[in-house]
Length: 85
Image (spheres, helix red, strand yellow):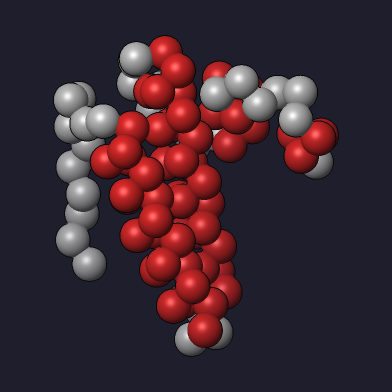
């Protein structure tokens, strides 16, 4: 697996493409029974998706954090029912 480089001029659509690739990897890992690795990749997919939303809404890169709760808040999902979990 190659390491992807974050470019400061990436568009939200490019972030979403990365998220889709991470989710596809999570699905393969799940079917192989590698559940811990699957969860890691699924977390990455959600993280990158939220960062795409933040970039789309603010036109600025999201902070370099891994907290889904913080990223969801910055993306405007703090009042979403799932944010209470």
